[in-house]
Image (tube, rainbow, N blue to C red):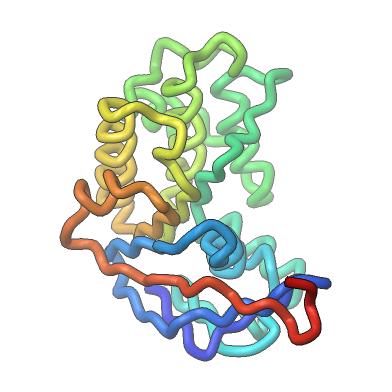
Length: 221
């Protein structure tokens, strides 16, 4: 579940972003829509506890993020949030399986190799566990990043522009994998996108339209 009210974030030296209020029930799907610069990635970072809002309330997966100290916020994120960033951040120094193992190190837990094998198999990646990311296609690398995001069965999955660089077939497949993986976890799914294909593929999803921010007073035109 996600509940945000009066949420605002001020980029240092940049515009102040004010976000519409929203409530998404557990297991629901939310699409963040808006032009470039409207704050889609910033909203995801706030929901993941990577940024601290300037004002407002934000409750994610039952946790009021305003009241978490930094160390507790990191532990909460590792336990409750699955994040699929635009840049996949896979380490080529590690195998696919060991890239997934990093999720356990981040949470301070023992690595569950059986869970890694199961998750890779569920996403059609079982034969690729020993490969390095540089040996994967773009679509395979994205699946690995998704496997890492859902490995520990998070309560919320956040995906930042997951179809931006994909053709129509790959985009449809990526969205289906996101939905299926989130449904399997019982997770709330949030997708930040400007891709009209996402709207077409998820017509029942809740939509949060983000306005273009106003420049600070006195800023050059």
